[in-house]
Length: 242
Image (cartoon, rainbow, N blue to C red; front, side):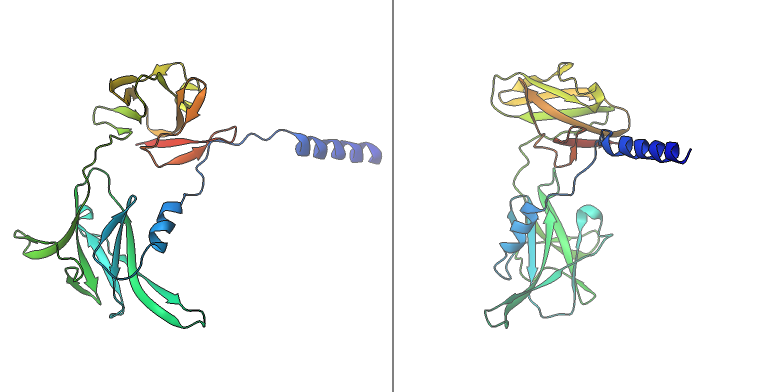
């Protein structure tokens, strides 16, 4: 009897070890490559500037703390600058400054903001671009952004989800994902203008994983930075419908 129990336990353990494991679609760790490039590219204190898809704000180390609040958040949140020190070969501090990096908001042509320096709300002394809010009676610093020329994948007000793919003209681009059981032949996108492919489909609230297809080649949605893993380990695009 004892031998039977030992053998049964061994077979159960063997089946657990050798059983195939199927991973669920999941979101990977965020890619910080472009953010890290923005940080390492800071050379010192200057007016705010745009690099890749990030706005870089800097300030001298002449105060104990610096925060920033934005108009598109209705100034409800204060984001605090980080202190960075650069060191020489002998370990001494060669320069230091405060910095804050903001991912440029989509569909905004201007970002207005105020600094909070040691608790005092004020304009950015390193930014010559200032506007005045007559209704609220205070000044704002601002930075203008390039016009948004690329449409993005997003949920529409009519309840549909709008998918956009930008590429070469004359292709047959398809859409497939967890909402089609990864069948990419159900939805073919329409080329509305040369190089822009679009389709609107109904999706219930939830999180979906998907990819665009050209022939047998699958590729990511470059207008949507959210990523996830498919069950077979591929990195795919991810969208959450609320």
